[in-house]
Image 1: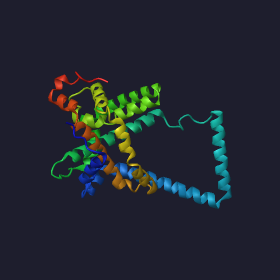
Image 2: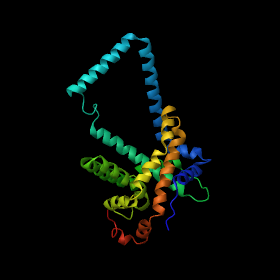
Image 3: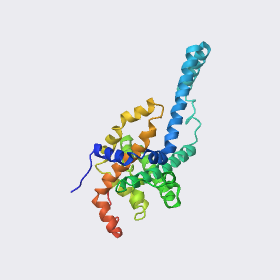
Image 4: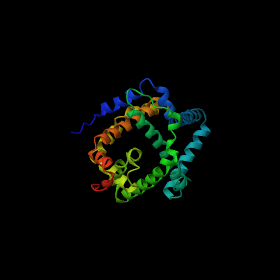
Length: 266
């Protein structure tokens, strides 16, 4: 009999893991936290500056109005830059680096979550960058490319298939951390699809349940991310672990790796 945790229980598991160990949580997540805060403060500064300038300078108001009208007219004429001057390769590279970093943090969050007797994760600062280690780096890059291709195929089919593909592979990197040494990359995609069958909507609702946290991060210009980012990463790891530990497929295939692909289907 499968013993799945409820959403509140999954979140409680994350909070209990993190409770009393804020230093460890911050050391593991400091880079995305600082990045979020810097972006929040940047937007706050720009908003405050624009508000002040618009309210005190008629010339500036006229300039803004003229710029908006010019941009609107350029859009109508199709003369606006297609991607705002951002190279697709730059966007791809930045997204890949972000994925490598978040994967390393996810690996460490899962490791911490599974420690027994209230043990604390060792060397969290170092483990935050473990996605760049040779033993993980190639796999993360290959899986990123494969899932990106799957996403493009989904978009070519329609929006809904693209969303389904996205959610089917949300756990792919944590799955790679657990069983990547036993499966090929295409087999991991199939296994991720299999494990997420019946859980895609669960994950959507799970992420949606953090709505007020997301709003809080925005309203505090990123400062709330100091707590929320490690909490969410642990909670997502707990969501994955809830599926993984209750998966007969994974347990059987780990016990019998030679039969790893016999029952992998869509």
